[in-house]
Length: 226
Image 1 (cartoon, one colour):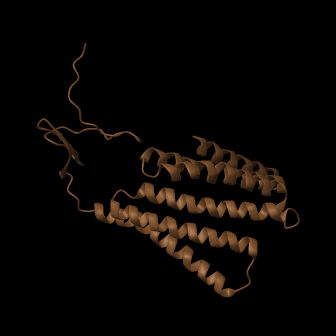
Image 2 (tube, helix red, strand yellow):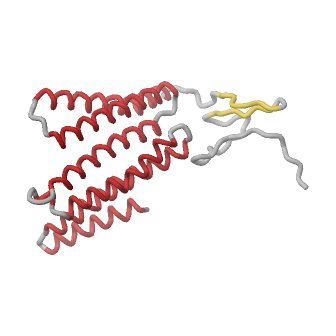
Image 3 (cartoon, helix red, strand yellow):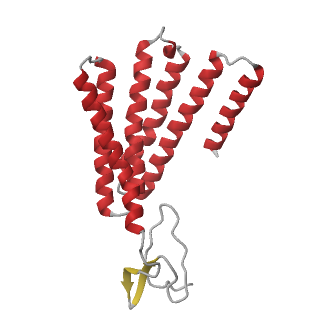
Protein backbone atom coordinates (compact mmCIF):
# COMPACT_ATOMS: atom_id res chain seq x y z
CA UNK A 1 0.00 0.00 0.00
CA UNK A 2 2.87 2.34 0.75
CA UNK A 3 4.49 1.59 -2.60
CA UNK A 4 1.16 2.17 -4.37
CA UNK A 5 0.74 5.51 -2.60
CA UNK A 6 4.24 6.61 -3.64
CA UNK A 7 3.66 5.62 -7.28
CA UNK A 8 0.30 7.45 -7.30
CA UNK A 9 1.90 10.55 -5.81
CA UNK A 10 4.64 10.49 -8.44
CA UNK A 11 2.04 10.13 -11.19
CA UNK A 12 0.04 13.07 -9.83
CA UNK A 13 3.13 15.27 -9.70
CA UNK A 14 4.01 14.31 -13.29
CA UNK A 15 0.44 14.94 -14.50
CA UNK A 16 0.32 18.31 -12.77
CA UNK A 17 3.60 19.30 -14.39
CA UNK A 18 2.49 18.16 -17.87
CA UNK A 19 -0.95 19.74 -17.70
CA UNK A 20 0.45 22.90 -16.16
CA UNK A 21 2.95 23.16 -19.02
CA UNK A 22 5.85 23.91 -16.69
CA UNK A 23 8.00 21.13 -15.28
CA UNK A 24 9.99 23.01 -12.67
CA UNK A 25 13.12 21.97 -10.81
CA UNK A 26 10.99 21.47 -7.72
CA UNK A 27 8.75 19.01 -9.56
CA UNK A 28 11.81 17.06 -10.63
CA UNK A 29 13.19 16.95 -7.12
CA UNK A 30 9.85 15.76 -5.76
CA UNK A 31 9.78 12.91 -8.29
CA UNK A 32 13.36 11.89 -7.50
CA UNK A 33 12.59 12.02 -3.77
CA UNK A 34 9.55 9.78 -4.27
CA UNK A 35 11.68 7.37 -6.30
CA UNK A 36 14.25 7.31 -3.51
CA UNK A 37 11.49 6.65 -0.99
CA UNK A 38 10.24 3.73 -3.08
CA UNK A 39 13.78 2.35 -3.46
CA UNK A 40 14.69 2.57 0.22
CA UNK A 41 11.24 1.44 1.35
CA UNK A 42 11.51 -1.65 -0.82
CA UNK A 43 14.93 -2.38 0.68
CA UNK A 44 13.52 -2.03 4.20
CA UNK A 45 10.67 -4.43 3.39
CA UNK A 46 13.14 -6.97 1.98
CA UNK A 47 15.20 -6.63 5.14
CA UNK A 48 12.20 -7.21 7.40
CA UNK A 49 11.15 -10.20 5.30
CA UNK A 50 14.61 -11.69 5.71
CA UNK A 51 14.36 -11.15 9.47
CA UNK A 52 11.38 -13.53 9.48
CA UNK A 53 13.40 -16.24 7.75
CA UNK A 54 15.75 -16.86 10.70
CA UNK A 55 19.28 -17.55 9.38
CA UNK A 56 19.59 -14.19 7.64
CA UNK A 57 18.12 -12.18 10.53
CA UNK A 58 21.29 -10.09 11.26
CA UNK A 59 21.63 -9.07 7.62
CA UNK A 60 17.92 -8.25 7.48
CA UNK A 61 18.22 -5.91 10.44
CA UNK A 62 21.27 -4.22 8.90
CA UNK A 63 19.45 -3.54 5.62
CA UNK A 64 16.33 -2.37 7.45
CA UNK A 65 18.39 0.11 9.47
CA UNK A 66 20.45 1.25 6.48
CA UNK A 67 17.40 2.07 4.32
CA UNK A 68 16.30 5.24 6.17
CA UNK A 69 19.94 6.40 6.40
CA UNK A 70 20.25 6.07 2.63
CA UNK A 71 16.99 7.99 2.16
CA UNK A 72 18.27 10.79 4.38
CA UNK A 73 21.52 11.13 2.38
CA UNK A 74 19.68 11.10 -0.96
CA UNK A 75 17.09 13.64 0.20
CA UNK A 76 19.88 15.87 1.53
CA UNK A 77 21.63 15.74 -1.85
CA UNK A 78 18.44 16.40 -3.79
CA UNK A 79 17.24 19.36 -1.79
CA UNK A 80 20.68 20.93 -1.30
CA UNK A 81 20.92 21.24 -5.10
CA UNK A 82 23.89 18.89 -5.22
CA UNK A 83 22.59 17.32 -8.40
CA UNK A 84 22.70 20.70 -10.14
CA UNK A 85 26.48 20.49 -10.22
CA UNK A 86 26.98 23.66 -8.27
CA UNK A 87 26.54 23.01 -4.61
CA UNK A 88 27.31 20.48 -1.94
CA UNK A 89 29.71 17.95 -3.48
CA UNK A 90 29.97 16.04 -0.22
CA UNK A 91 26.20 15.47 -0.14
CA UNK A 92 26.34 14.25 -3.73
CA UNK A 93 29.06 11.69 -2.96
CA UNK A 94 27.35 10.53 0.22
CA UNK A 95 24.08 10.03 -1.65
CA UNK A 96 25.61 7.91 -4.40
CA UNK A 97 27.66 5.96 -1.86
CA UNK A 98 24.51 5.18 0.10
CA UNK A 99 22.61 4.15 -3.03
CA UNK A 100 25.36 1.74 -4.10
CA UNK A 101 25.74 0.28 -0.61
CA UNK A 102 21.99 -0.28 -0.36
CA UNK A 103 21.99 -1.84 -3.84
CA UNK A 104 24.46 -4.45 -2.60
CA UNK A 105 22.17 -5.04 0.36
CA UNK A 106 19.17 -5.48 -1.95
CA UNK A 107 21.05 -8.04 -4.03
CA UNK A 108 21.97 -9.92 -0.86
CA UNK A 109 18.50 -9.91 0.70
CA UNK A 110 16.45 -10.67 -2.40
CA UNK A 111 18.92 -13.34 -3.50
CA UNK A 112 18.64 -15.13 -0.16
CA UNK A 113 14.86 -14.76 -0.22
CA UNK A 114 14.65 -16.30 -3.70
CA UNK A 115 16.94 -19.22 -2.86
CA UNK A 116 14.92 -22.16 -1.55
CA UNK A 117 17.61 -24.83 -1.78
CA UNK A 118 20.92 -25.04 0.14
CA UNK A 119 23.00 -25.06 -3.04
CA UNK A 120 21.22 -21.95 -4.34
CA UNK A 121 21.61 -20.27 -0.96
CA UNK A 122 25.37 -20.63 -1.45
CA UNK A 123 25.08 -19.04 -4.90
CA UNK A 124 23.01 -16.21 -3.42
CA UNK A 125 25.66 -15.70 -0.75
CA UNK A 126 28.32 -15.54 -3.48
CA UNK A 127 26.26 -12.92 -5.33
CA UNK A 128 25.95 -10.96 -2.10
CA UNK A 129 29.71 -11.10 -1.49
CA UNK A 130 30.47 -10.00 -5.05
CA UNK A 131 27.95 -7.17 -4.81
CA UNK A 132 29.39 -6.03 -1.48
CA UNK A 133 32.90 -6.03 -2.95
CA UNK A 134 31.76 -4.17 -6.07
CA UNK A 135 29.87 -1.61 -4.00
CA UNK A 136 32.90 -1.07 -1.75
CA UNK A 137 35.18 -0.49 -4.71
CA UNK A 138 32.57 1.76 -6.33
CA UNK A 139 32.26 3.90 -3.19
CA UNK A 140 36.05 4.13 -2.98
CA UNK A 141 36.07 5.28 -6.61
CA UNK A 142 33.49 7.97 -5.87
CA UNK A 143 35.66 9.49 -3.16
CA UNK A 144 39.13 8.86 -4.63
CA UNK A 145 38.11 9.59 -8.25
CA UNK A 146 40.74 7.40 -9.96
CA UNK A 147 41.56 8.10 -13.60
CA UNK A 148 42.90 4.65 -14.45
CA UNK A 149 41.00 2.76 -17.14
CA UNK A 150 41.96 -0.52 -15.47
CA UNK A 151 40.04 0.51 -12.36
CA UNK A 152 36.86 0.99 -14.39
CA UNK A 153 37.31 -2.38 -16.12
CA UNK A 154 37.86 -4.23 -12.84
CA UNK A 155 34.82 -2.53 -11.34
CA UNK A 156 32.69 -3.45 -14.35
CA UNK A 157 33.79 -7.09 -14.10
CA UNK A 158 32.83 -7.18 -10.42
CA UNK A 159 29.32 -5.86 -11.07
CA UNK A 160 28.82 -8.18 -14.05
CA UNK A 161 29.77 -11.23 -11.97
CA UNK A 162 27.56 -10.09 -9.09
CA UNK A 163 24.55 -9.58 -11.39
CA UNK A 164 25.23 -12.90 -13.15
CA UNK A 165 25.30 -14.84 -9.88
CA UNK A 166 22.19 -12.98 -8.69
CA UNK A 167 20.08 -13.80 -11.76
CA UNK A 168 21.25 -17.40 -11.80
CA UNK A 169 19.53 -17.95 -8.45
CA UNK A 170 15.90 -17.62 -9.68
CA UNK A 171 16.76 -19.21 -13.04
CA UNK A 172 18.25 -22.33 -11.44
CA UNK A 173 15.49 -22.31 -8.84
CA UNK A 174 12.90 -22.45 -11.61
CA UNK A 175 14.90 -25.01 -13.60
CA UNK A 176 15.22 -27.33 -10.60
CA UNK A 177 11.45 -27.12 -10.01
CA UNK A 178 10.46 -27.97 -13.59
CA UNK A 179 9.31 -31.56 -13.89
CA UNK A 180 8.96 -32.06 -10.15
CA UNK A 181 6.09 -34.36 -9.33
CA UNK A 182 3.18 -32.66 -7.62
CA UNK A 183 2.52 -35.80 -5.60
CA UNK A 184 6.11 -36.10 -4.33
CA UNK A 185 6.09 -36.40 -0.54
CA UNK A 186 8.85 -35.31 1.82
CA UNK A 187 8.69 -36.43 5.46
CA UNK A 188 9.47 -33.55 7.82
CA UNK A 189 8.91 -35.18 11.19
CA UNK A 190 7.43 -38.29 12.84
CA UNK A 191 5.76 -38.73 16.23
CA UNK A 192 4.14 -41.92 17.54
CA UNK A 193 3.60 -43.30 14.05
CA UNK A 194 2.20 -40.03 12.68
CA UNK A 195 4.21 -38.29 9.96
CA UNK A 196 4.37 -34.61 9.12
CA UNK A 197 4.91 -34.46 5.35
CA UNK A 198 5.37 -31.80 2.69
CA UNK A 199 3.83 -32.15 -0.75
CA UNK A 200 2.94 -29.97 -3.73
CA UNK A 201 -0.41 -31.71 -4.13
CA UNK A 202 -2.99 -33.55 -2.08
CA UNK A 203 -2.01 -36.39 0.24
CA UNK A 204 -4.72 -39.04 0.65
CA UNK A 205 -7.28 -36.52 -0.53
CA UNK A 206 -6.20 -33.82 1.95
CA UNK A 207 -4.55 -30.56 0.91
CA UNK A 208 -3.03 -28.46 3.69
CA UNK A 209 -2.47 -24.70 3.63
CA UNK A 210 1.06 -23.30 3.44
CA UNK A 211 2.39 -21.70 6.64
CA UNK A 212 2.37 -17.93 6.81
CA UNK A 213 5.59 -15.95 6.60
CA UNK A 214 7.71 -16.48 9.70
CA UNK A 215 5.73 -19.53 10.88
CA UNK A 216 7.33 -22.91 11.56
CA UNK A 217 5.67 -26.33 11.44
CA UNK A 218 5.83 -28.20 14.75
CA UNK A 219 4.53 -31.71 15.39
CA UNK A 220 3.30 -32.27 18.93
CA UNK A 221 1.07 -34.60 20.89
CA UNK A 222 -2.55 -33.65 21.27
CA UNK A 223 -2.98 -31.58 24.42
CA UNK A 224 -5.74 -32.58 26.81
CA UNK A 225 -8.29 -29.81 27.12
CA UNK A 226 -9.40 -28.78 30.56
